[in-house]
Length: 259
Image 1 (cartoon, rainbow, N blue to C red):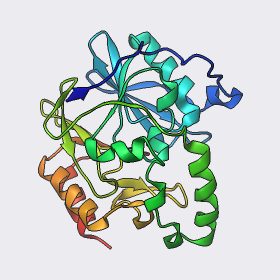
Image 2: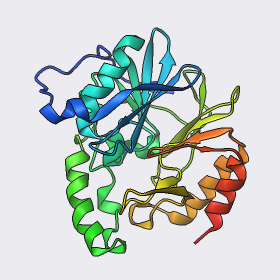
Image 3: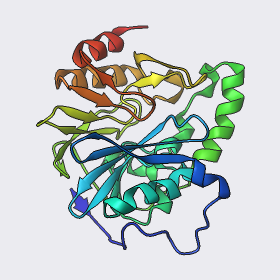
């Protein structure tokens, strides 16, 4: 793990004004495991998942949701000691959006740095694979969700320890997509390694390969789902909607080979 800069953690950046609707865009911190909470956001359906992980006297943020969630994430983290740092699961707009507004150093995988500090990977999207309504809506949503380029303070790589979790590199949906894996309770926080949500309808469903419109390499994304399955998680919490529990390994293995 490398760190290249520090700033006061958990504070609102000077000059940033919170949008009035932002207070409704993120819920409270919900405990999901020892020292781990989920903050669900996005108005009105709250299908974006941001994770808070105990990190010393505060909490780190894993994945940063959308821009309007920044105030809600800070508020959820405050009674837990405030935000120590932000770790991006990957740099798409709905995962980096609030990062500039969290007032803490931001880390990502080295292979994700260019997208985090650039356009969030949108130049590589192929929205033509969506239906007409999806194409029109997604272009607007991506712009609305994104907080813009993120200053990356350092990087984390496969095998690094992050607040008691091990970094697992799961490329495909994005080149530097990572999960956080905790062996003691077999908990995986997996960003967009898989979807449990249809991005065009927002309907929840079973685990599936991320939509080809947003993948850098869909075959690699399938392989990463199998890599995650091989860990045999007890619970895998993704970047959106609900976790996969029960036979997680079997579910992900089958999903990786479907369609």
